[in-house]
Length: 199
Image 1 (cartoon, rainbow, N blue to C red):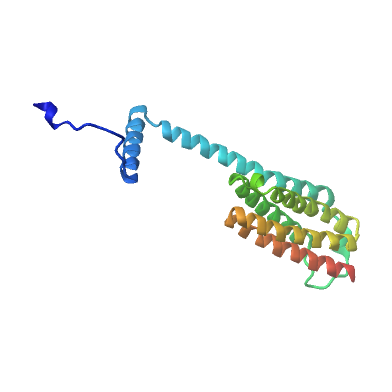
Image 2 (tube, rainbow, N blue to C red):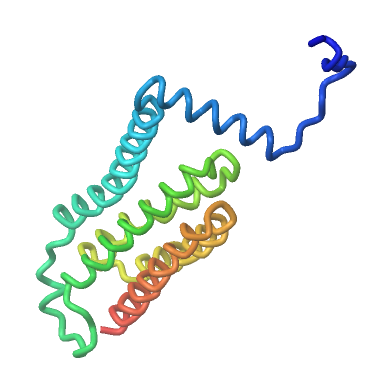
């Protein structure tokens, strides 16, 4: 008889993790084949949202920096200064600010994507401090010629970047590493600003 080979089930059979994973994978494969490319569409929409948010995260600081350069960055008095040969031209200072804004935008996006601004609220305040100090430095130093104030701003920006690097690294190590070139840029601006004090 067929009923003699049946076993009575007293409780659930404990399944190993590999059996559960295999069953889940097989049912997912079956559902994907049955429904077409439903999973592919979901991944594609997630990728589009990620690309859109990355574009916004990078375009925001870069466009603010470009606006700052356009409005305050053209100063003929800096170019006419009797400066040493190693003091950079104005376009190099602008490029340093733009590259720093770009890298900070990418690193901030990496932290945001990991949920780091919610986990570590100081990360957002440090990022906004870096962005604000970077935007204020150029009009004060290059346009107005307030070099002492500009030096204080550069040192504040450097300190904020050190904090950003540490906090970002806890959330995403790549984001923390992307801040390091910005630290070099802030040190470069500080040296230029220090030289401007003695001209």
